[in-house]
Length: 166
Image 1 (cartoon, rainbow, N blue to C red):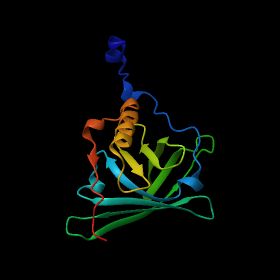
Image 2 (image 1 turned 90 degrees about the vertical axis):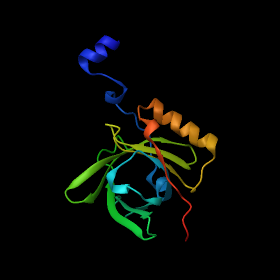
Image 3 (image 1 turned 30 degrees about the horizontal axis):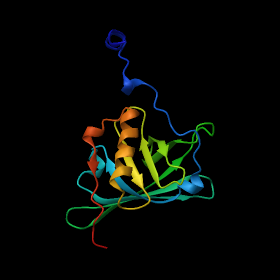
């Protein structure tokens, strides 16, 4: 298998990323706290990052991302998300700047919609989300383990400080 991988470039990272088979957007809507993420330029040095999803009358989802900069000021951006293929409800597209849209794939969600793992098929972007700003260490380790199994480079995860003054 290693020879095949070298010759044909197959690896865990190039295998298809499996999403959750079903996603109830009504249950997914609401506020999520970013617990950890892979490094990215658009969230560099942000603490207390949250994402709030609101279902619109047209079925799309308004996305509001907020974070706190080192100087205490709030950085926020609004976008829209949608499900391009109803047969794959956990594979959303999200747009913050026209005409660019990124892939927002829910690759894990617990039965109670308390924790979610979100990424994209090339595994460059990844987030651990929770309904609460702090998660138990055993839960965190379980989520990291699932992410590792799905091919994300969890050694590079940045944990997000969620202890900011109101």
